[in-house]
Image 1: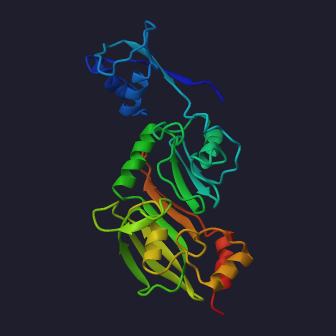
Image 2: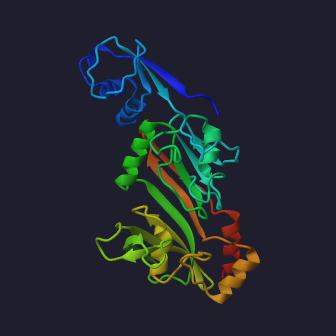
Image 3: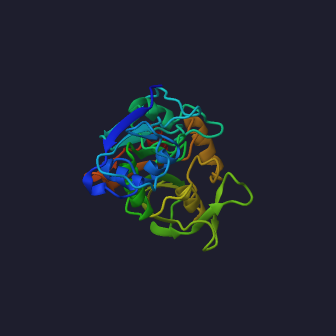
Length: 318
């Protein structure tokens, strides 16, 4: 890995007399005030006289110079790895990836390498937001390991904060293609059910009573009726863990291939085995948001991948 990067800056007249963290935030707009505060407290900010500036609240003077050291957003569990990525869009602030099924988003117990983060560290070098910490640099949102499709990753703190705000106010456009057991009736509808960790199985999420867990809303519409199944589009109003999978199972239409919430009929099981389809039939096909730096409206589309296309072709009513 490369060395930590350094930034030198000087306090201007407008920032004279204000707190160090605020003055640095004004001089370095790509770094959030919270990130700068952490850097100061961790001893990564040095004055022009060579003294460590360890107090974020100290008042600064015009003309003072500071050198900041930005540690690379990696840890022993997150090393750069040359893993192929499908880059849909990239600029200095963010990158949009079309993730294949089977790729874990970030390192965790049991998956310390071979993740999207490892691939991003190689592709982007040190250009990833530090807000997510050393194991999740740049990660603003996630999709499950065995779900394919679109993800946006922040390369700067400012982009991270802007994207996170859009996720928080539910203005991000997220649409998934899912193949479910049975044909939903009505063909379109809304599942408005709170989700929380299952008490019976901590690996699973479960529908909870109102006020317990987190509020979750999924809007679904049937795109195509299939043989004892359906291709549905799910629009997420919220983005909770396993949301589409739990909500669709809750209304009696679990995703085909879902190992946690499936309970598929024998006919589907033999078909999935024949096709070697070993994941939930879920694909994040559309992602839209306002660029956090330029203000441009961005909208990305990823076609349904070949494994789900093959499953669809087998399920189409002749």
